[in-house]
Length: 179
Image 1: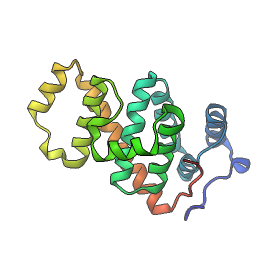
Image 2: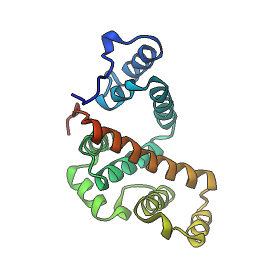
Image 3: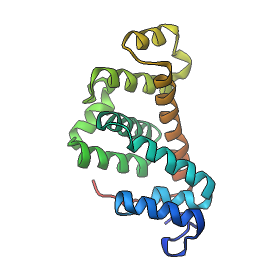
């Protein structure tokens, strides 16, 4: 599975066991991508708390975050994360594989409400060329009613995906989902 030794569900103890139980309860399974974090239980707790926070968002915001994870993973060529998030977009949000191709080619065609589409485009601009983000971009976002917290949070979410992509590609996380 992975180049690193991850903690098997049956061998988990302490906080890792507690996290595995929470994940199993939430998803009915423990994705390999989350199991990978068992190498560092403190980081695993942080990642799981972040996932829980994202799951507490409304459905439209969850879709936004999933699209961002999908697009960032596509651009960084992380097969595991691209496939995992693509499968969520298909199974939970009714998108097709053709829809995924369309949003990769033109992010502005993502099926999102105006505010979330603006957040998506902002996040992807920051991922593709952070140096090009300027005061006018911020003013445009504010004119749409988007707070500085929301701007910071969406770029943080997108950039966090780069960390996961790097870890999963480096340590060869095995696919455990179906598209």
